[in-house]
Amino acid sequence: MNKATPSYEVDLYSDEVIDNPLPHYRAIRDIGPVVWLSANNQFAMGRYADVKAGLRNAEVFSSGQGIAANDVSNQLIAGAFTLTTDAPLHNKLRKALAAPLLRNALEVHRERIEKTAEDLVADLLVRGRFDGIADFAQVLPLSVVSFLVGLPEEGRQDMLKWAAAGFNLSGPLNDRAAAAQPMLAAMQQYFAENCIPGKLAPDGWVARLYKLAEIGEITPEECRMMLTDYSVPSLDTTISATGELLFQLAKNPALWEEIKADPSLISGAVDEAVRLGSPVFSFTRLTTREHEIDGFVIPKGSRVAMIYASANRDEREWEAPDTFNPRRPKVSEHLGFGNGPHMCAGRHLSRLEMEALLKAMVGRVNAIELLGETPRVRNNIIRAYASLPVRFV
Amino acid sequence: MPNVTFIMTDGRSREIEIAETLSIMEGALAGGIDEILAECGGSAMCGTCHVYVEGGPIDALPAMGPDEDAMLQETAAARASNSRLSCQIHMAPDLEGLVLRLPVKT
Image (cartoon, rainbow over all chains, first blue to last red; front, side, top):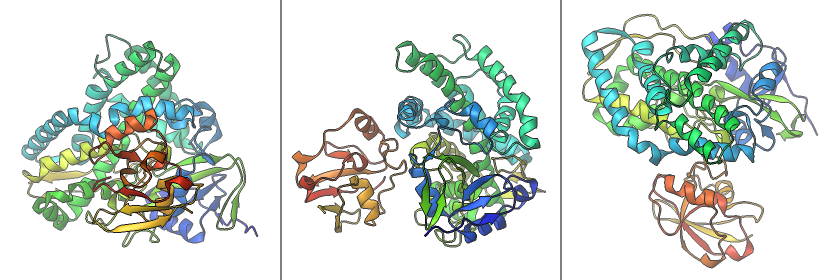
């Protein structure tokens, strides 16, 4: 017996929800395993078990017709990036894309990343007041775009604007999406002018893609697709999670004392920052056939928002979900990196960057002081602090 | 349904039945062996369903494909000659009695 899917009348991508999302996530979870978002013309799932099962069931919950919350963007991005393909093409692209991002492959870069983190922390210690986002969280991700992806340093700062624009276009067609539209052309132009032999770092990841294309492992078109896969999602995501981490440590001095006393908590702390911060709050999928969850039916061809940020606060899964607890059992099993075949390809790198920062801080930073207001970013997809005035002592 | 024995990280053994429609990874998760993370859900993309084959009908195991071989270089626990990804092994009647050991880190 099919039950009617209950509705939730709130625009998930509105300023109101962005500024205060948790009560809305909770309401969506409490209404049922799947709800109809009438304001966004799509379904949504907010419970951990259902979101995880959906992400792992990529045959039914397809990415190949886009992961945005509007049809115009989805038509543009469908099949255009590794993120927006389905098997079997996805498996081929993902394999080529992820090879340098796998755990062992990243080990050769660990020393350099840790050194960059140590220099940064030493510099911030003498500086006094600094912005935990611009001066701290952004530094490693931006340097990675240059020395790992291999893009020229010139224009690198613009990448932050373009990435934010790309995420804004992945929500509904609201004012934020409209404002983002013109910026994508600028990004395409940057790629066209800079992603060419001679300008790229010869041993960078993009240069590697060109070599794969030369030997016929991937097509030149697929090579162009993966440029975006490497550059756009590597910034705002890690920056957001790093900001969340710094905010939590600054807000809760006892937590920093614990980590200083026991650095084995670093890895759990990084996962807790990704869980609580959930930098990408949601992407959508399209159902390839009718699908039932606990008696509720999602028709074939439906857009479904997977709310990772809600799943990561689901009291059905997490004990004291709003508490930052690096000792939490199964701390790494949050959905902040997604799950299933499209699970974040950069998660090992992201962890490496954040762990390097904490390791550099442990021996040097006695306390982290919060010195002012902590405004939030308003983006259709990215949840993050815009600024964190802090001081290391 | 055929039985598979898992040697857990604390040394205890657990025997579970796995339906022939499932991979060993899927069967293990359904049977509550939650030490297997299986982050990618069975696409041979994450290396987090790594197991060591310790005994039973070893000759009945399916041959290793190139994706599995490549991903086994990336597992958190060291690869050994008896390493496999449990998502790439589909349950079959002649795998009755297979013994798999879970790595300490997945």
